[in-house]
Amino acid sequence: MTGVISKFFIASMLMWAAPIGILYGFNHNLFPGSTNLSPESMTLWSGILAVISVNVVIVFYIYAAMKEPSDKHEPDPKFLADAKASIKQSGATEADSSSDRASQDQFELDGKLLELDDSNFDTAISNFDYILVDFYAPWCGHCKRLAPQLAKAAHILAGLKQPIVVAKVDADKHRELASKHDIRGYPTLKIFVRGVPTDYYGPRKADLLVRFLTKFVAPDVALLSSDSAIRDFIEAAGSNFPIFVGFGLNASILLNLAVKYKEKAWFSVAKDFSDDIMTAYELDKVPALAAIHPAYSEQSIFYGPFEEKFLEDYIKQSLLPLVLPISHYSLKSLEDDQRKIVLTILEDETEERSKGLLNVLKAAASANRDLIFGYVGFRQWEDFTKSFEVSKKTQLPKMVVWDGNEDYYSVIGSESMDETDMSNQVSAFLKGYRDGSVIHKHITFPIFIGLIRSQMGVKLAFVLIFALLVVVLIPTMTKEEPLTVGTRDQVQEEMSSTLPETRALRATVKED
Image (cartoon, rainbow, N blue to C red):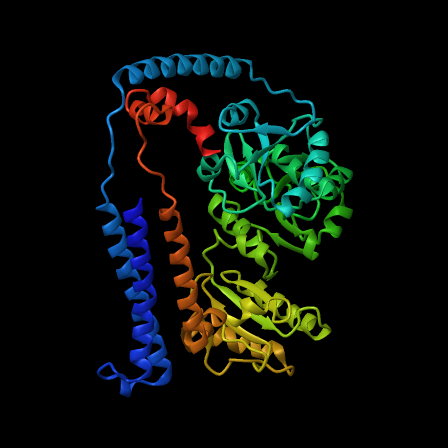
């Protein structure tokens, strides 16, 4: 241990001396060619070389530490034999008790949250057709606020004709289970429908959550046989999903698509409805398929052809409103849509003048269903808008065509808009885009890039990297000496290759 500590102090001295020497050399023009560099370039190169020197010193320290003799001793044979027998007996006892617990593990549908872990998760998922799982962390504030809402909803959902079970998993404790289900933040909710998981992005207040989840246990296609049944269905569906109503259509025509898009919309067919319903939904004739977005007070009608290909095209295009407000939540709904996005950046999406432009955009969206139309306010989401070269000095509104990833296009001559005759300006923008009169650009990240390009940014990055390296090195100082004769810990290490079952039983305890 003494040798390792001495090598650490030597490495520490070199770690300070090397970067300081490099910085000194650049500041006093001791390196060839450094006199021709700008101050920014000099700062950048000095920082890079300083970091490289630190990494070289670390490699030297690791190599030297690995050469340190371990002074391992052979354990006493008699003690090792006795310890092996003891561990075997302990492992067998633990295996038996674990088997007994698994066989006794039963789930009761009593309206309470189920506590799941590695031992019973798969059993619970296979036992229930519908189960909502909350992957949480005990220290997470959002998780603590969500917990009482889930408990309240669990009681209601358990009483449905087709019950939905609500469960929770301590993802911070059971990290392997969380990793298996791609949990990257807390809380994360997933709804398992007959074992198949789907991310839950719906509301999290108990009453809205119940309404949202009842969709998963509803029939794939609801059959509506009167005016009142139509009104009741639309009211019960709420405003979280688009609603498709097939007036005069056969349920079999919609069934396959209803199953395919069940996670994203409500589907129904209506028969025996009156002329009042025809008027209320602005139907010119039947059969017809109406797409209704209650949250946006929007509706569109499809009159055919009703072959599956054309139906699916219409349904896919109608899953989103004509003009989508861009937010963290709504961006997730664009992941599976390959259409390009006509993005309009406003000064403030709540202003009265913005509403007039949104009406123009809706008309344009109706005529260009091969594109998605969206909008975002600079004041509402400044960081996002800056990715498209927007700042406080930019004249807004501004329109671009975004591919949803890292590329976007500005139309030559339509970089910004004024408040006169917006309809013609939007038409000119779309014509210019379709004619190819565009400038291809890449998404920028101004906050990060601006920091890196600044001298202060380089110095700050160097300090952070150095601090991180020191933190990584500290644990090597406290590494324990090799185990000596007659310790149970060493026996368990010796036994690791011969007792895989015992090791597996203890793995969870070790992790915790």
